[in-house]
Amino acid sequence: MTSPGLHTALAGCAYLVVYVLPLYVVRGPRDSPPVIKARLAATAITSALLTWVPIILAFSQSNGRLPRASEAAALLGLTAHGFWSSVAQGLGLTALLFAGPLAYRALGAVPAHGPPRHVSRRSALQVLRDLCLAPLSEELVFRASLLAFLRQRGLGAAAAVAASLALFAAAHVHHLVDRVWHGGHSVRVALRAAALQAAYTAAFGLHAAALWTAGRSVAGPVAAHLACNLAGLPPLGAMLRHRQAPLLLLLTVMGVAGWARSIAWLFRRHAW
Image (cartoon, rainbow, N blue to C red; front, side, top):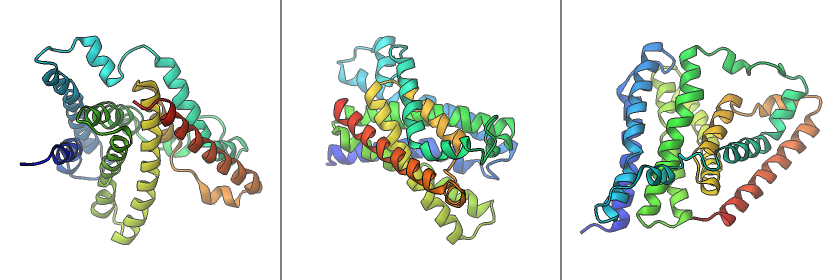
């Protein structure tokens, strides 16, 4: 006999496998148009399927009563209620986290108008992937659906968030594989980049989980995800070389500290 905890762990791993499988099955450079198109289509399908998991579980736990559409939407945070307040909260908290990089941009170190350089160099398909499908699919799967499922299975709020963070970070291991297989990087260089990305991904996962917990709306996490993908990794090295480095460092530290306090407050106030 397997324990309920083991069943839940295996189901969480199944979430991960189903979501990332197309990223490994569709081989080739990740920015190749045919690869992007194939992965976009496959990810859209797997994300749509995974969002049904907590709805089906709710059905099985309610003596066969099919949840109404409004109940299913509320379970996944897909209602209009609190939409704009959730978006505002997501963008505001993201701006606090990026206080230093935003100040760096405002000081004219990079063009103050128009998209960041790393975005302007992307093709339309890359923008669709990075700024549309990735934020929507990942938040639906790893926040709305997975967190709801883990709570339905009896995990406490902290355990559910921790499990979702681990699975969310694991879902990005394919970047390491892409760097080695198709990017020509050595394993050491790829691992160093993957470690940095894993830390950033884990911090963002905590960020998105707090937003979803607070608003029970997927709108806030999606808005925050889009903003973070648009901003990219903070240019810490360039910021430290800037003539206003002490000010930028102070704003960065204050922003991160304020963000951490805000995240802790959201979890305490809105534990579900």
